[in-house]
Length: 507
Image 1 (cartoon, helix red, strand yellow):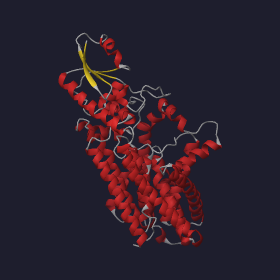
Image 2: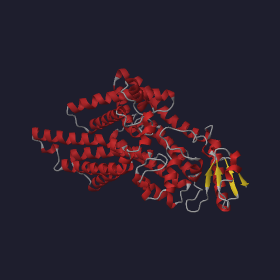
Image 3: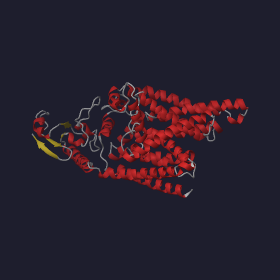
Image 4: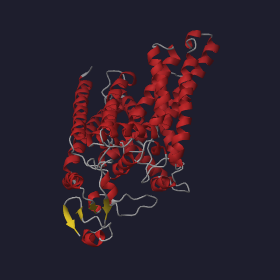
């Protein structure tokens, strides 16, 4: 290991360890209030039965249903506590980190100062850092995008040298059967695998027959290599019928996403802008968005050209086919953007980050090997490392020193105490939209079902599903007395507040 690679390794391990430690801190200590996207999901988790989760979800929500069922089973076992809602995403993120390091051995051989960028670009990306403990599915999307790369490498190895480990092959088949049910974006990440593996098997058999070289294709490697793909296809079809079909039929959700998708008719300027952001938003901050946008787009075209050139020259090395995978995946994503089927936003495109990082590293390695561009590439690598590392530290800092953080924490803690008091004293709660600060839940968004203040309060961990008290929403606390007159006669005393302050009010 050379000096540059050693420095990159130490900086990567230190930074990733810091990020995961912050994540664990947030998951165990109640230091990160929930927000509107989480409220919408948690409301479904808490107040829908397991069978009802297979039906349309409330508050314009969509979520992979098998994953949602497991999430409900886990969180309900702990009475929807704060930690039970925060921990699953952190566990998934941790598995992603370990898988990243594991893939390094296959993706990028030692000796390259760029190899640890594969880990750092992923963990510093907006979706990974922002959703590291959130009760959403985006960390799972990232994990399964890495899983797709692992699956591809395993299949390429099988097509070349056959099955070396029966247990690993069984794990591969099981993964293809299970993972489609945990992510809406995994089928997109897996699609290029079919093209590449089938193309490699076909080309190897063609060369075998032409050159009369049986060793090119180990006995039965074609069949055992294709079997996991058949399993995957069956699982994806089932997943589409029972789950994705609900997403595609959700007119509210599609209508809400529409402003993030391509507008009809086709507009070249709009396409250019969305393609730019697909790459640029892998970075964070104005400077690094520009850097990732330029380097990302350049690496995509370089990867596309190199991958197809290698394919036409019948170069079937795993690294060449991995590059082809990344290029095809990004081309497929751009096609979906053009078709208006995929919104352009970091959390919806997080599954492309591993492919983009591989393309960027491939281009940088090529520039580092060329005398005329070596100095430029060395500077770019140093800037990228500095950028992704600094981004992680500044993101963690911003989580606790954001301008709204103190007020959000005050609302969270005071509302938790108010709920506990109301349940102990059997007092109904009257709450206004202040409990949802800084989210504007009173603002009407086209196609989006608004969440109300009482629904927000019910998502707080202290609000118990089976032993709860009535909660009423009101826009202005000045009208509390008038509002109470409309309540059942037996309600004479309530606890009213705006999230920050609560007081007992009698008729």
